[in-house]
Length: 624
Image (cartoon, rainbow, N blue to C red; front, side):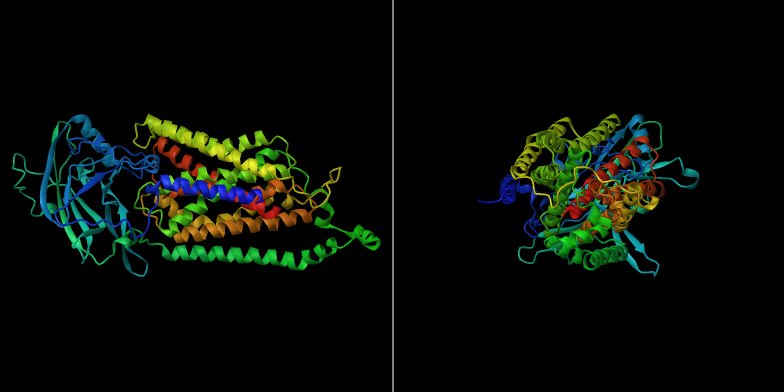
């Protein structure tokens, strides 16, 4: 006979293996997918949505007057790409492995007045063009100089659509109609195949002479000295697009090609953040150790002994937390809501742990666009088993009787709030005609995953949780609730809860800067090792701060610990939202109302997920 928890774990592993067997494209084995190209082989160049850090509204690439292929084909590969706003399509650019192109006139486009105005608006808003070649994004190389004068190279994602004129030409707009592509490759000595390891683009604006043969490409010996292509006219304008390609050999293995994109300028800050977090953890661990060693050890020994008449008399002198042992397991108010939030916290925690584990192992490569978000959705749905189980166990500890309504609340509360906010954001994007709007059938797929897989798994987990008999309480609950003495102002619940959230926030706030920069300023964030360390420290800190403040609360004879143990570490999200306001007003130049809605909408989604996660860690740390 196996316990219910073992059966639950076995069922979860079985479902995981089955889902992986039907989803091979989600897995990525390091070094297995290396694709070489022989000389002269055509490599497709794909185009993605246009993006801007000032509006955060992506638009389709072919919404602007660019050269089009004969047939535009949607090349999105997974659910994550669609949810991220990626709209990957084919292009007319012809790239041949190992063959340089000095100048190739791609096409001429007659741009009408309406399209010219759209071009001017997109250039003014500093929209960037996103290309993909062999799975690698097009990048613009930049040089960073630190305070010591040391220089290092880093990459910006994509390249600018155009630029504004300076000085007296402030109202003049120039489009980057010529691109110089540098493709870095590793040459396999065995079969002489080309393995692309980096894709750099240098955009330029060049006014091609009219009525010339495309094969001659005059005036392109020195493109930077040519006149720029203006799009400031009010009448129709002909724009000629061209490109050049340079192949350059680089001593970098294909398996390490993403290391080039992960070169960040803040490694020292990362290590400072981790050191600061470790100090916080050591401080809290020391406090817990002092409590356990100096205060609790002798009391546990005394309470485990058979009570004698002398001990009974001695109990009259008890004080502090020992006086509330008969009320400490008194059920809290809104027990079903607490159990649902705890179950959702397990679901989020499991999703993040499994995703980080697979990411660190190399199974979720960031070069497979959208695969990480796809995996997170997949793991979140799968973790519904544990959400139902832990929610049911918490509900039974609170002497709950209506387990069906509690299970329904667990299955719908957190996903319902997340989906409602996401749906509102999507309606806003639809109103702006942005390519970031999720199509209707994709929304149907998400609803099917929710009600077709996640909800049934929550009920299965709840079934395993409710089959076990209610755990025996450590002590008998007093029939009459004990009166809580008047507490000093600094011991009130709101004060201690707000103070308890400071340390967990202090652990993550430095890393939040890099994550926000990656999300909103189009910088690469591939340091999953740092992220995993910070996450582990966050979990430890949340549990330890909840234990310390719960002990102090019980010492003040306040036995209402259920909700406070959950809210103490969860209050860190309040400071995270405050930091998001600070980041918005100091780092991002957003003026559109729709863009403001996007920023704070997505910030709320992330904060709410961390709310239930840290709350679960704090609650079960105190309970165990």
